[in-house]
Image 1: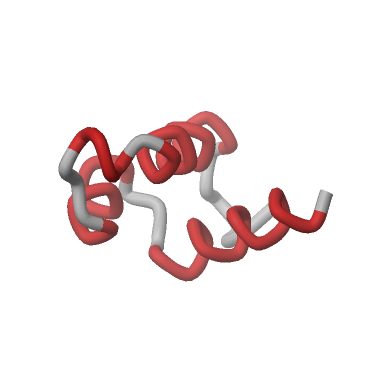
Image 2 (image 1 turned 90 degrees about the horizontal axis):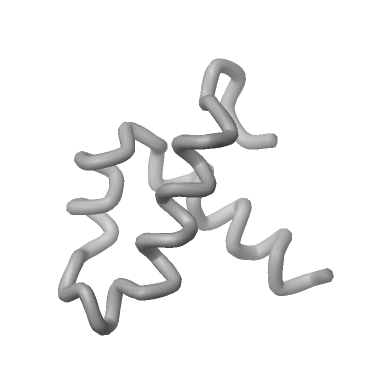
Length: 52
């Protein structure tokens, strides 16, 4: 799940933004700022998704 207290909705929003960041022009720092989800949590969830 990532950090305790990170709402799954926010984590999913961050992952969605990461998936389209090449077309939306956002940096990882921008996504962290918008969603409030820490960078390590985003990368952990992305890693978990690629293992499935």
